[in-house]
Length: 391
Image 1 (cartoon, rainbow, N blue to C red):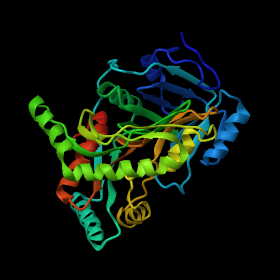
Image 2 (cartoon, rainbow, N blue to C red):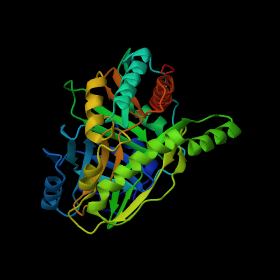
Image 3 (cartoon, helix red, strand yellow):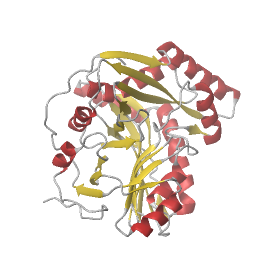
Image 4 (cartoon, rainbow, N blue to C red):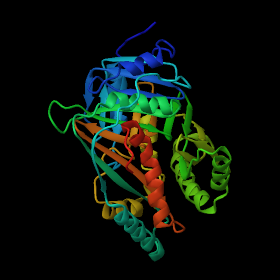
């Protein structure tokens, strides 16, 4: 049985998540799924001119207690958010371990151009390390882009399905963005491993990730890499910087903050990550999921420490505008509930152009060649969905 309504307050389980996933096409609405459930939206009831969380919550309450806002926040908090209230919303259980069957991805034919070139990215890392040595910067995340120009229009549908087939337990998303070319849908899609923040009733959860290692197809070697990551002083330091910042920014806004003393391991098909799940209790009904997410964003997982110095370094060193990459994707409703995930392992598709991003956290113990290799592993998630080899 399927239920449609102007807002997503229908209970989970009212629709088949695989059917909903297969119903998505670019320009038709958004898709969002994770361990807590799946969400499929259609149409636009209202466009929200501001990403201001308090204004968004007031607008949703004006529209009724079943209204919801969905969309994306840019990396730069000063940039323009893209949020809409959909006409119809369907909810379903999580994709879970369901194998999303369908035809395999047909390789995209075309050319790929890295921005910057690999050697130039290593030079960027060297510049960041020099700034750290000079003082005032403890960590900075530097990204690079792979621009793909295909021989014809790129179909985002098999890309999303392939991402779901490879990692159905990830935070899977596809969001319509304002098109840069009239008549050509523009889609931000990806399979993020990282929850920025969720609020369900009074329960607030954040799950920062930082510190990573490539997986191996050999079971014993794969286990060894995970154990080495958990024991790595360099990666634990990088991770601790992120967790401390998240806790510091949440503490004034919540009660009963719980921060584990030790990180744990989580895995994706390509990477091991250090993970810490932070939990708290919200007492202010006006502190919506969007409000709390914006208080955290951008975390040191995508920016650095101190935040202002890292943001300045990113602006001066990276040769492109990140846009929505390392921003956040998700939803919030009139009750203040919602879920926002980091826009990672993602790409932007419009016509015959695809932009893929990947970044790495740079700390004083980083080595440029290692950080370049890490971005190559992270690019594999979307490259595999495209059927491309180049990284």
